[in-house]
Amino acid sequence: MSEFSTPGYEDMELSTQILIAEALSRGARVEVLDRGDNFILIEKGSRREFVKQATRTSADNYASILVMENKEVAKRVLAAAGIRVPTGFLVSTREAALRTARRFAGKPLVVKPRSTNFGDGVAILGPDRNPGETAAAVDTALALDSAIILEDFVPGREFRFLVIGGKTRAVLHRVPANVLGDGVSTIRQLVEKKNAHPYRGEGYRYPLEKIRLGEAEIACLEEEGLTPDSRAERGGKVLLRKNSNISTGGDSIDYSDAMPEIYKHIAERAAEACGARISGIDMIIPDIGDDSEEAAYSVIELNYNPALHIHDFPAEGENRRVERHVLDLLGIGEREKGEIR
Image (cartoon, rainbow, N blue to C red; front, side, top):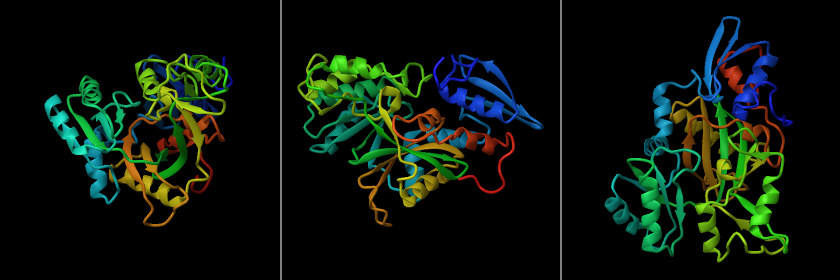
């Protein structure tokens, strides 16, 4: 059993495990309804709540869930609320996608399915891409969804804001899967060393997912003229992915205290615009040191069913105990008088 596992529930997703541990510490009764689906029942006093995967709860209504799951609809809702989002187009055929891609000639382009999560099917193409790369990205995205989005690539660092009950409870900077060169080891060996860290595992039962060397990672290396058997320069960071999802081997760095309040408020406004009580807001910020009203940012996605464990066990930073806020929102157990911050 690892240091972060909850005894008796080690086979379940880590976010569910930490929610169960907090519920039990509050004197609640927990019944596992479907282990494989991470579906549980939490009861205390008159409260009775069904919870799936830690953050699928009765707090969010079905319409809000549908908005968050549909990236195109979410963008429209956010834009109407005065929140900045990337410019893009929704298309449903390969021909329309290839035609639309020409509008982005000479500029970086993001191609992604309308409704997938965890970075599945997302491609970030450079300004000097060739037609074959564009077609491959379109085909991959269309294989996962009946409609896809082509949009501007927004430069800057990506942050995940976890909003629960109208407040930003934690912020992470997510770094794409990477290794740091030592001048001796191959990239493949560096991946093996990094994957040996006790925080890394598979199936969302660990704080960080293991880095893979699949097609996406190898393609990313090829763009830099590298292969898994290349030796990385000492101190040089080698990126293995363009997307920064923790689910594809990315690193998590806690920014909850360092993030200016203006961006936290933007995340809260985004969740409110979609009627979301629990949401993971992905935001690109070029310079978090700029906390003026005119500061540049772009909200690129709202995520229903955001992971909790990445905020409790970041690669760098402190445990934010975000599961407490989920149970507070659901009215499970006592909380201290006053607003929890």
